[in-house]
Image (cartoon, rainbow, N blue to C red; front, side, top):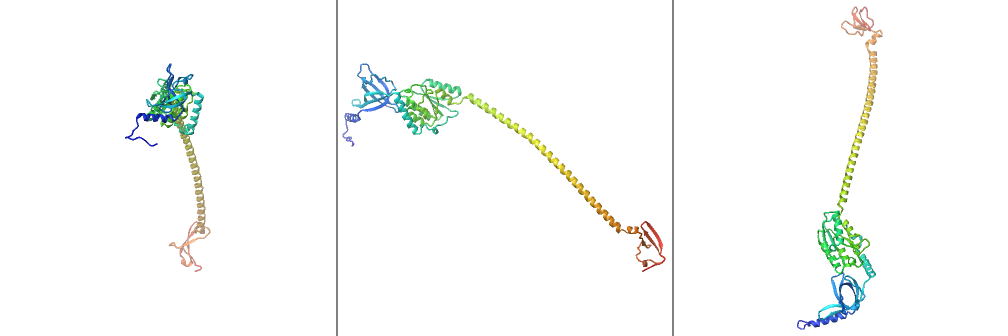
Length: 403
């Protein structure tokens, strides 16, 4: 609606307060859910007071009711209740409160049903998806721990982690882990550790408890804060049967705080044993490779020797064959030459004058050695030499016949 006020015509405080009260009263009765804090039942007083708090936000509101409304109801700080109340704005103090006519504790069955509905919602949004899970660092520079002050969970995480890796560093955030202030305290501590660049992993730990005690770790605000964290988060809530929604959102779920202390850091003894094993394996591998190399070298030497012997034997055999072939060739050539020589000798002998002389012919030579071919080449009474196959004769020409 339009603003009927102006600097010249302002409303007095009472008018504003009365109009707020009028607007609040129009809401009528509503059902409200929250956590109970600061229950005040004064003896002899007709009115009881309590504070109703929203566990997912730092918002609370005062509630008043007649004393008999709380009769038979055991309320403690942190209890979940459903209240039927009418909003009431008290003009005199300018405060808002609820006037309750019915207060009903939320039973375990109803709590579990609501957690199941929230679980389905978060699952549908993908907050439980395995692909969102981040691996833990092998050796974190610093481990953030969100837990109760001087609690058994804190001791279990610290002692078991330091027993495995004495040099591990922790940044511990001690907070309330149950009750109405647990959720905002854990969320704030988680965000502080997530913003610290030195912290490589965050552990959220507390001991076991009832369903009501572990409700803060199934709170939607905490689950979404863990899902939004950049640092891997380890959930170590309660004991093995306990399973708050934080276990499903966290990157790693540990059954107990003791288990978390063992998961976030490696065991120095195991790592040393693994290193020794790897060294021994490496030594055996190198030794095996060297032995195989030596065997291969020896085998190669033997193969080379056999190869060389085979090559030499082959060369010797080939040389012997070549020598035999050369010998046969030379012998054949010599025999051929001898045969040719014999034929040549026979031809020469056949053509030689001596052969003619041996057949009874004679060579007639004059005194000056010229051969007489015709009778006219000599004169009567001239002495000629007769050259026979075996010796010579001197003869005197007595007569000439023919020309």
